[in-house]
Image 1: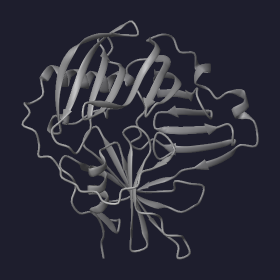
Image 2: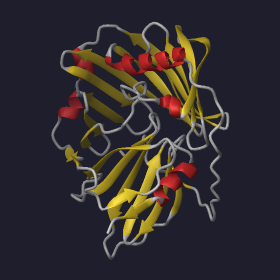
Image 3: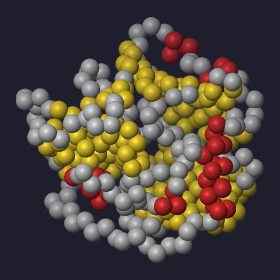
Image 4: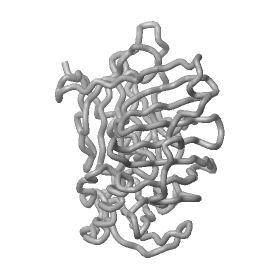
Length: 329
């Protein structure tokens, strides 16, 4: 899984004229709002919880059941998608297994930069105030929990706006929305939730059918490399984005590693994948693709290499990053 969902739709753009809006003259974020975000970032690692949450984007609705437990060994989590093809993710700390029952496949990988609702902020979450004006909005009741609404208004056009509904007692995120020009383009929300209840260990184990023979296991490997080892670099990062790490990864059953550069502005993450194409490989179509909701994808070809830039940022930001990738001789 590269993103939340498979790449499903193609948007063709014959021309794309980018004009980045200069940073807005917004005040500094309030200390109270920043404290709420700190509490929200810490909450998933402090509390047990279980429930059902809903994902909504582009008229698509999907429900998932989540069980999350903290103990002396760390975090344990199970997420089961309840709509469409069955998918079950089991996680212990950063080690993940994704079960696809229809094809009897299991993918294992380390959780690099992947965010699962309600754990969507890094911890510590960094200086978001550089890129967003963060403010307290109001209190609102969500599934019988009092929540504090926090709004993150982007200081330029390079990122989306966000709104968080945070449980006032525990700090757990109850609902989140990603905004574009004032419109919600992606939303997660709990429909049912129990916080700090007892979590039985059986709820976090694989189903009996998942332990049967005949499953094909693919280990998606990641190798972290030192700064400058890649023969690629991003020549001109958009304002507010910083490089997190450079790695080599295999993203399919094939034992072929691709170069991966991960970026973030403290909240949104963007990944650049560079894959060498064989001589007999058809040249991929360059241009814009879209997944769903806040995820955008941009593909270009450079010197026999396919460069795919994907992230939860506006199309102009994804294109700026993708076009800035250069090869170091």
